[in-house]
Length: 372
Image 1 (cartoon, rainbow, N blue to C red):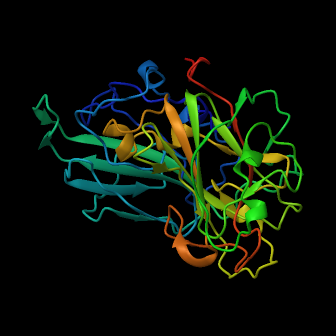
Image 2: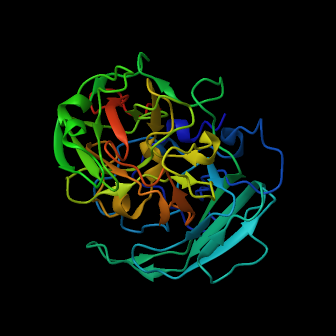
């Protein structure tokens, strides 16, 4: 029901002075302490028409601090807010979603999501001289987002509330057919290093895969480019034989093949998982390998709207030519986007790491990306 993120792309001119009737109040959903099952974010805030337009591929003159453009964030998560041009920022919070400004501002750019429910996060940048080539002064700006703070995400593919995408879903318009780079990690035998098995459509089998090894990574190249459209834009398939024995990986995207940006991801488990241990899928968000074979994990490029790489022009959300999949070494040393430790079956051998079967494309530059 959180329809805003289902229809977003970057617009060109989205920044309005504080106090303006057009002040951007893109309400994302963090959770504070209210029941929000039937909340429709479109009723809270409607983005201006330009919001769903041509993705930014040039440096934004007056960038905003980045808050991940998500509907849900994990309980106990932490965010450190930084500004692309080092402007001074202030942060405020409110449980009153109708409030237009917080009761008080903090100079600490750190946000912690410590209670469940809806919470509105405000970010204010003081006026500053822009480093953009055009020069000039950027006025004081205020942004707000509503997040839903949760202690669980969607369940395994066999349940109706799962967000998994079936390999035969008609929304899949193309498949990854070219690998530009592969770096195998430890614990994977040559028999499981055949990259060609990860090309083309997912089949849902156990052996039509390439194993990355612990900490290994593989990068797909898409000549046409994946584009930001409504909802998920691509999906990644693994070969798990179970809803609960899962091997996970971080996903990064790039326009030029040199600068990669990780998609937001969260892991709420708090215990080490032995080599043949099991995950609870409801504790996983935004990581490849979440579902059983034949069902892909969806990834939405709009979650990167206003990321530093997008605002700097390095990342064009309508021209993603590279998707990198990086296996998580499951010892808890790796952290998710919210500074939680991540665990995965560990240690594993022979076919260690994520067993990548396929990447399916849902939106490309030839489809109508992000329609109004």
